[in-house]
Image 1: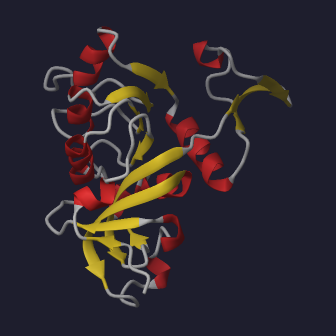
Image 2: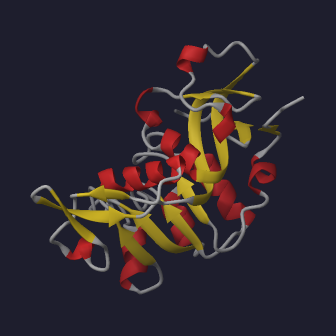
Length: 228
């Protein structure tokens, strides 16, 4: 009987290895799998490449993972907190000290690179960044009268995502803005680990409400108290 539900977070994260590329869903706090990220700190994997919309805010979540010294490289669109007066800017401190690498990718481009990985494409041409420092080292092509950059697919060894509901086959639905990057990251990773607020029996999740089909999900952890 196919059952992707794991009893606890350590079991679900056990095989994340040093040097892995980990896609982490969420837009700021919305849809960020905080419990899985903190479980990753406890798990101990190091030299990670983390892909997210931002580099973490406050002192928990991704910021805590960075401050624990587990991240070698951050690939994100927004490395700086929106309100530096109220945020410790942990990532910026580490970056200025030369203790972590940064690959800055425009938000739309990062999604398209993930989508290319999910679809098995060799890359996509995007106009964003053409004629800027972001174009350095990239193939530039004129399409019509406009410059485009070749952006390569962004694959993950693992994806840590957050959903509202899931079943034992790994079918997932999301709640409002928590949907953001989670579905595309689930499709772009070799192994997707989802934390869900509610675990449903097969058939309880309306097929019309399934956003991420279970074929893209390898493990599900139920965390009933987590906010979505």
